Length: 105
Image (cartoon, rainbow, N blue to C red; front, side):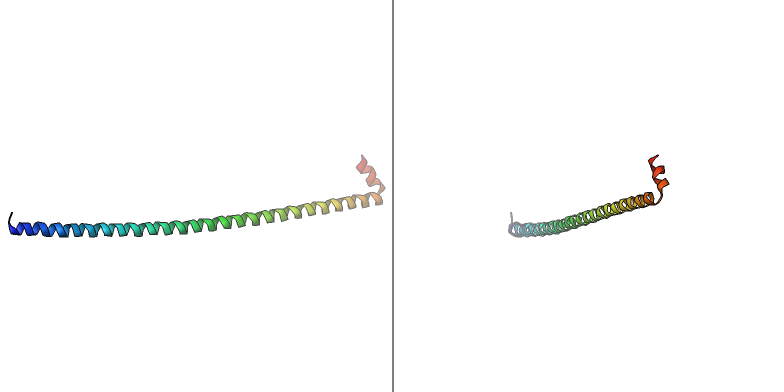
């Protein structure tokens, strides 16, 4: 082996290892950056999911309140109609003796 070949071997060995080391460091840095991006996406995704859960809870509560309010209003209407029907029946029966006979048959 001549001096030129020895020099080339040493040169490529030193710079080859240095280049390989630089490439590995670069790949490691890129992997770290990618992982940080994934973790931040996970955190933002989790926050968005939690926000949606809260909105669904609020909608469920609002719907339940409206349902209960509607049910109470319906009950009040039924009671009013019953009172009016009772009052009308009583008034009609008191004023018209034949109406009482017709309803009893």
